Length: 203
Image (cartoon, one colour):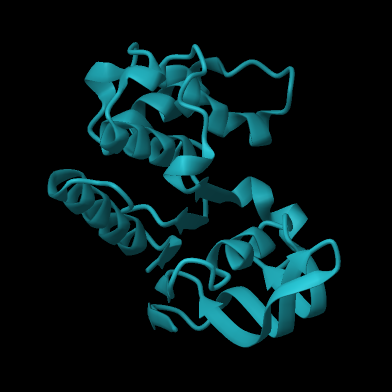
């Protein structure tokens, strides 16, 4: 089921008879819909129902096996630099020897390229993203030593660092206590109020 509250008629994502899968095998199919820019949308369904595959399709990471898709007015691969993502908590490696600030800075790499320095503006964007999720005092802490809720908010800060037009949040509330869950919900409301499109998968 898809639930949305929209503020615009211009689609951030448009699907026409779309199907997605891997290695030629379709996992989710027969999707025709428009997700308006500036809307907050929930993809609701049990585990294994294809929510993550659909989000990966929006990024061009799942194969389009039928139909058509347009994301932010172009094909998914071209739109990626304008998309921020928060993957499922169990799909990331928390043992990497990096600080929270370094993790958030990774959110700039797609737009900067592999050799361009982060610069003053990039550092300011990282600082702002950390402040938005309430983790600025922990910027120098090792990422793997943070709590699960703090890691989740840190990955959201990474997604926000590049000032995305579209945010894809895959099961963002899994394993969170009420305080961290409420913090994330409030951020989603703020992001939508700013005119960003937010798509959240949840069971």
